[in-house]
Each structure stands twice: as structure tokens, then as C-alpha cells.
Image (cartoon, rainbow, N blue to C red; front, side, top):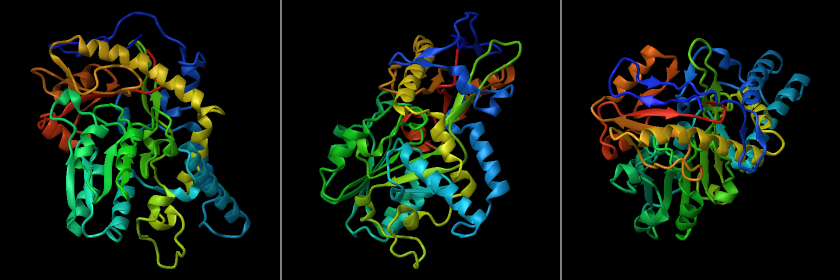
Length: 435
């Protein structure tokens, strides 16, 4: 496939692309046809001459979502709750957005809240816990997470003088995987909250959240809060099947892709496929009983997660665009997700096979391209070369967009990977990428 072929250790251009002609349709693991070109046609921004391999950081927007936002602002941009004609249309669009968001993760509408980003939603949740946790509560916080799922809990522990335990799975960069076994020694009868990532935005390794949730729930009253931002663009999320108490991801991280036109071989990359700059937080009904409301006092009873945590932060026009994202996956979302996983496995196999063949390249954490073990968020470093230097050379000789840095997982990159200067080189792909 027309993908990254060679990473030079010297020379002007870091990436060289092969001349083979393998392109076209990808078959899903269930044998169903996956039409990459049809998927790409849904994203207007992909007409630009820029390849995005920085897709773990954000996405282009589905054309139907753009149209929905425009229509809302042109025709129904009024305060929610009105009874006049346009007000009723606005109410309906917003309600449909909430319903679509809940359906996407197999939740109920009263179990979700929409906000501007996952960082803000976790900050709101921590405030609600600050008003409810007992004085002897203990927190267990993963050290390989994005800072969004760390800083709020550090502040909570400091404000309430609670005991916080770091969940560090290993000190070996190739083995940074969260498991029930390396969590178990940290749990006690005082454990109130465990936080972790479903998939690291640096490592791409998929953690067995169902098994981790089962381990956490052996402690009466203990809850699990999961950051699903890096997983949601790649796999179906079913919060009930996972058994989590809280789960959050960003819609703009469920991405889109862009084709490259011109004299170079065409290479498409994924940004996360869904829509606008919004995030959703799920909280089970049981877990909501362990938190206080930070909403206005007159919102009584505060019987929905939105009433407890929302603080009117959900943009009406953006929420109203979520049904278009749900529709993009078609009538059989499970079939679509299976096809996506199979296609992504083909893409990451090509890159990982090359990276792992080089003695001067270190791929961090999961080395396998098995779609059951990882998603195509791949980070590496090159011996004797700075990550920044590699990325800047790619910038200079191509229109391929990759990134260097810590990507807000600074604690892990600094302390566990030992890359304090300029972090990793990260290449992230998605289902609309082709060879």
C-alpha cells in the first residue's frame, strides 16, 4: 500500500514512499465491503492538499455535521425551552442530539452530559466528588494518562487532603499496559475512585477495561472513571458492556481523513471522524448516587447527569449535529466497526513492520499490529535523532503532517519514556486512510 516505506537515518527527506499500486477497497473482517472512497467523500476538508497524520489530536468535520450547524444557526438559534414555533424546533434538535450521543455509547439520556472537552467534564466531575467523598477516601490514578484524567484528581486530593496512589504499570517503556494484576495491590477498602485510559494517546495499547472494572468493583463503593478519547475513533464503545461508572471522550477526536493530490503518490490519513469540538461524559445511575450536584440550586431534583454537571456548557448547534455522526456509521454500526478495525489493522501492520525492522528505532509499548491489542496511534523515537528534527524534516520535504512532543501525556513521556527534551514522534491513522 502507498504508505510510509522508509525512515532514513540521514538525508534531507525522512520519509520515502513506494511505487506499488495497491489501492482501493478494504474488506471488513466479517467479509463485508468497506468503501474507503465513499467514506472520504463525506468530508469536505479532505479536498485540501494536506495529509493529516496528527489525527489523535483532532479531526476534520463531517459535511453533514457542518450543514446541521449552519442550519441551526440560520433557522433555530434561540434559547432552549421556548414554546413558540422556532423554539420548539430548537428544543427538538437539541433533544435529538442528546439521544444520538447516548445511543452511540449504549447509554440513557439521563446518564450523559455534553461539554466543551473531556478535560472540563472531568474537572466538573471532580468538583462533584469533592462535595461527596468521605475524608478517608483513597484515589488510584494512572500515570500513563493524558493530563485531562490526572490533574482534576490531583486537585481533588489536595483540596480534600485525600490519599492518592499512582498506578504505574511498569518502568519498562515496552510494557506500559494497565491490567487488573498491576492494579490489585493498590486497592483497599478505602478506595473510592480509580481512573485510567482506555487507550493511551501516545502508546495506542488497548486496555481490558471490562476486566479492570470487575477488579475495581470487588471493593464495595469503588468506582472506575475512564478516558476513552483515544479509543472512541477506532472502536465501538458500549459503556454497559464495559461495566464502567464514568466514561468520557471528545467528538472531535472521532475523526476524518484527507487525500493528498499532486505529483506525489496519494496517501490519505485519518483525523478523528465525527464532528465538532464537544465531549460527552457518561455516568451510571448508581455512580451518580455517589456524587453531589454542582448545578444551580433550583434544578431540583437534579435527576440527570446534565443537571448535575452540565452548567449550560453544551453548545446547542453542536449538540444538534451529533445525529449526523451517528447516521454516518449506517444502520448496522457493529458491522461498520468490525470493518474499520480490520482496515486499520492493515494500515498499522505496514508502518509497524517497518519501524520494528530498524535497530535504530524504538516503538513504544505494543509492538503487534493486532487490532485486538492496539489502535493505529503509533509513537517512536530514532536513536541519535531528535523527534523535533525528524518532524521538521518531514515538514520541509512533504505535505504529510506528523507531530512531535508529549501530547499532554507529559508525566509518562518524561518519567517513564525518559524523553523530556522533545518527546516522541507520533503517527496516527484512521479508517479513511488508504495506501
